[in-house]
Image (cartoon, rainbow, N blue to C red; front, side, top):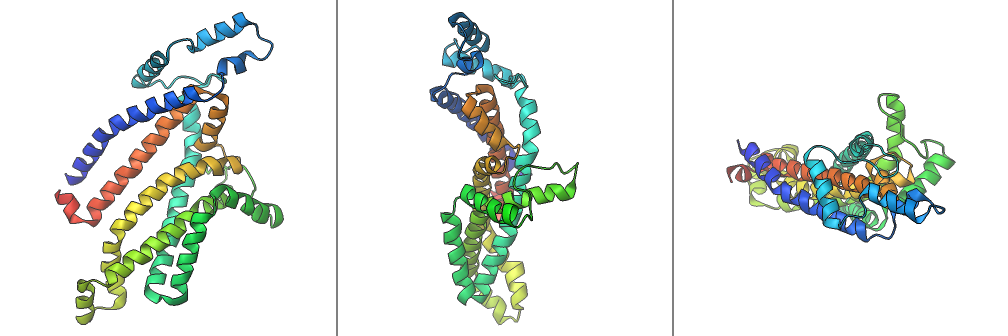
Length: 315
C-alpha cells in the first residue's frame, strides 16, 4: 500500500511537469533561428510555394494555437509527424528509444557497481586508495564525456582496433556485437558518474562507521564483514540513492553528445538532428519521452527510499 501511495502521488505531481516541459519547449523552439518551411521549399521556391508550405504545416497559426493543436493530438495518442520525413513521431522515437535506454541502463550499472566498490574499498582501507578516489572524482568531474569519447575512439578503436568506432548493433541481430558496440559509449558516459558515486559512497560509509550503533556491534563481537555489508551499507545507501538518481538524469543529457560522436541511432542524436532542422513535432515528442524517463527515474528513487528507510513507508 505504501508503494502504491508513493506511485500515485508521484504520477499526480508529474502531470503539471509534463505540461510545463512541453509548453516551455514549444516556446524555446519557436525562438531558435530557422524556418522549416524555407528548408523544405528550397532556395528556388516561389513566394507562393513557400506560403502554401507554411500553411500546410500550420506555421501561420499563432504559437498558442499551434501548441493547442499539438496538445490535442497528444491527448488522443497522436504525437504528429516529422515535418521533413513525414514519419510518425511515435514510430521514430520508439525505434530510437532502445538504443538510449541501453546506454543509460548500462551506464548506471557500471557507475553503480564500480563506484560503490571503489568507495567502499577507499572507506575501509584508507591511505592511498582513499586519495585515489579523490583524484578520480576530480578527473571525472573535469573531463567532458564527448572529449573522452573522442579519445577512446582514437585509442581503442582506431589504434588498437578492439572496439568499433561508430555504429550500433541490435541485440537481436548479434548479442556479442551489441555488447562490443556499447563498451566505448558506456565508458565515456560512466567515468564522471563512477567518480561521483565512489566519493559519495566513501563519505557516506565513513560517516556511518563512526556512529554509535557500529561501535556497539563491534563490542558485541560481530565480524567487520557482517557490520559493513549488512548494516553500514544499508544506512549509507540512502544518500547514495539520491546521487544515483541525479546521475541517471545526467546520463540522459550525456547520451545526446555521446550518440552524436559514436553515430548511434538513439534519442540524443535524433534530438540533435531535429533541432538543427527545426522539426518541431519531433523535438516535442522527444522532450515528452525524455521527461517521462526523468519521471520514471524519480519514481524509482522514491520507491528505493521506501525499501531502505521504514520511516518513508510510514509517512
